[in-house]
Image (cartoon, rainbow, N blue to C red):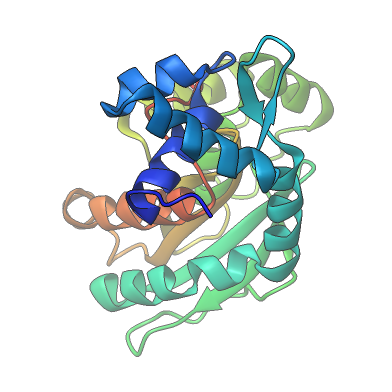
Length: 257
């Protein structure tokens, strides 16, 4: 059995190979991790034996299908709700408001988790209920980070109907709103979906950098003031970022705007 320096080094090499945009050689691994060619070869040989990497005819390496198998197993065992749960609890404690976790499904948002604190205002939302994206804090947070073509497609397919006097129904104004959300990172539902309720939402990204869900804090319009938002929006963003990271999202390598 080949004796290697450390399990940590092995994991670092795997991460390097998976994230590298091209094929990797033993020489490149040697240079990247400051080890001898012989040691680098030993690591690559073990990874090859276990199917973690595939050796090409030119003696370069690429990620192996074993990683795909592992990914498939992991996806079957975990759910977004499970991953998000501790972070949603933390957000609820910090804000003392109602917390929603919403999954994007087509042109709708589906509530998959709802948490209420002792100070929460009673709301009509419930797990399994679907709501429009354009009039909600969570929905606008998701839409803002879609590609331009996806946003255009959404506006072609969905009529922006007025749900309250504050609902944005003009497409040009709506696009301007999405630009503002992208700039600051979070959205604000200013009683646009339900009278008396304001929300702050932030997108959750998957490993491909796609906004697949969102987290939001909802409360009484009297409570969720501009001052409150300035103090608490950071917690919503922090929560969404932690969940995204658990899903494999890497903000440094993502191509999203």
